[in-house]
Each structure stands twice: as C-alpha cells, then as structure tokens.
Figure 1: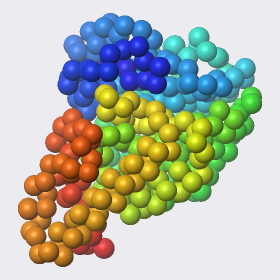
Figure 2: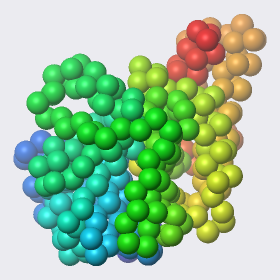
Figure 3: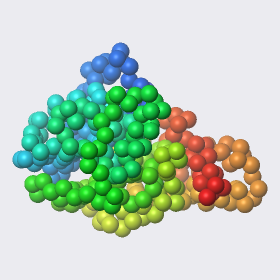
Figure 4: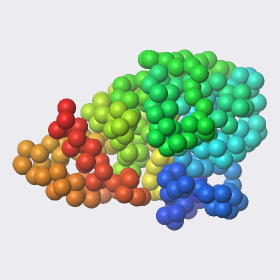
Length: 311
Ligand SMILES: [Zn+2]
C-alpha cells in the first residue's frame, strides 16, 4: 500500500499493509514478492519542480532529478532500494548521485548498500554512522550496512540543476542525528522521522532522543517555512498520509508538548510510573493512530517520564 499526496488509492488500508509500509514487520522472502506484485501502480510520485517521493516499505524516500544529478533522501530496505534505483532511471540518470540519510534507523538506511553499489555518495549528520554501527552490532547485521562517507556537523549544501539542497541539523530530537533536507527551489523539505503524521512517534531514547529538543526543532523549522512549503514525512497515518504543511509540524509540536506537560503534572501529583504509562490516548489528540505497541502512547509516556526524572 502506498500513501502519497496525489494518491488515487482508497484512504483505508488493512493493518498488515499499514505495518509493512512502516517497515515494522520484517518482510520475509515469501511475503515481499507477493506484496510487490500486488502494487497497483508505481511507488514513485512527483510532487513539484522535479522533487518526488517513493513509498514502498519503511520511511518515505524523497528524490530530485535533473540533467546531471540524482539526489535521494533515505533508502528504506534492500528490496525497495533496488526497485528505486531501477525505477528512478525513468526520471533521470545522473551521473552525479547523492543519498542523504535523514537519520540512522534501519527503515531509512537499510537500503544504503544498494545505493552505494549503484554509485551514490552517502551523506549524513556526523552522529549517524556511529548510531547506525551501534544498532547494527545490536541487531547482528553489520554486513548489511553501508555508512555515510561524507558527514557534517551543522549543515551541508549541494547544488544541482535549478535546485539548492541543504541538509540541516537542529540538535537532538527523534534521535541525536536527525537532519531536515530542504529543496529550496521546490520549497519542499524532507523531515525524516521528525514528523510521525498523526501517529504516536518512536522516541529513540537510546539513540539520544530529546522531546524538549524535538518541540523546539519543530517550531524552528515551521518558522523557516512559509504557507506554501510542502513537507515529506517519514511516516503517516493511513488517513493523513506522508505529506503535509507547517501546520502539521505545529500539530506534532503540540502533541509532544502535551506529552511532557501531562507527564510532568502526573509526577507532581505523586502518580506512579505505572499509572502514568497506562494511559493509551489523549482526548486532545483523537486522530492519533497506534499501529503497534511499539508506536503507542504508553511507550511515549515512558520516554517522557525518563526524560523528566533523569535530567
Ligand atoms: Zn526513525
């Protein structure tokens, strides 16, 4: 199932397809070919000014092509990465090829090796390779990794055709290595997992996440955007999809703010950790979807509790 801005697909998708799209189910050899063959249309869609997105499995891929370059944000997993590098030739052929990793998570970097073998130069924030290596060691899949050969601390700019592409770091948020990739001419920004559009987010505390930092980041990025800026999100609910505007960033900020505020007042009222994390929804955010225990309010509250009590 594909979630795109101009989708003609029905808004509803079944739970299995939804989880696959998020990359939260491992796509076994028997499942994936069937899933691929069931795709009704191309996973590529164009947004505007040469920038588009690709959704198959895992975090949404963003792309830009011009006469002499292909610029990509995130690599999903090996199978979708292969489908991407094969299919993008319909839109452009390089020869210069660049892959940005918005952050280190496996559903955004799992296809890196495919891209590297296809001649892409991988670029990411300086914290990404270390976090990716640590996660790969824990998951015992170091052989399947390819790491950014070029890293940056604050920002990295790449000019191609009409476009100025800038990857910017705003501090710890979803992890301690997230960047926002801006396509200036198209007025499009790829948020990686800095927006889970109407989904309870994954807050990767082991990967250096910081909820307060995340709130500030969303406010800063929303202020840098204008009313026409189009955002690509790593993940979104079936209802709202993986693109949106700055109001969606501020809505996510409001959710994270409410999460911290709720937890803080519960701590002050002397509630136990167990009481706090037993809550499964907020009345103020009725449209938030929990596709699994992994992406749920109790998990979010647990991280908020730790952030507020340990720092
Ligand atoms: Zn992530």
